[in-house]
Image 1 (cartoon, rainbow, N blue to C red):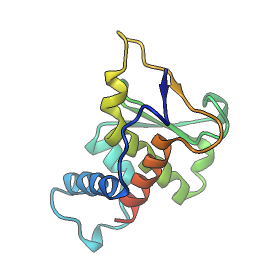
Image 2 (cartoon, helix red, strand yellow; image 1 turned 90 degrees about the vertical axis):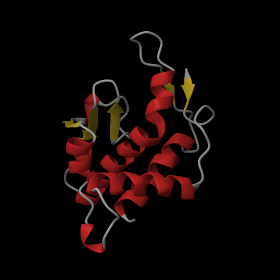
Image 3 (cartoon, rainbow, N blue to C red; image 1 turned 30 degrees about the vertical axis):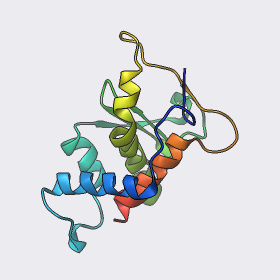
Length: 144
């Protein structure tokens, strides 16, 4: 079982911000400009990274406090239906999942056994490191 705290590599905020900027420059095919805002996270996910965005009802998510998830193997980003009424929350959740794609996908896939995805262990209490990293990435992506 993979721990979202202990097993993921440590990354400094400046490294995470650099990864977000690299994704934006890759999407736009050039250096970022002021007029690129607001950042089109849906287009980045769907057109640039080839993910499908799937809106799911809360009962389909493992826990009701989870607003999104990513299925690397199937290239699906799942977003809770309760975020769709709040554009900022919706965009942040997609950007957060993109952070998992950029920073954690290779690590996650490397820990698969056969066709079975590794289980992710989210310890209770403090927000896990992998989730903090994805939050930092989302903020940097949306507000470069």
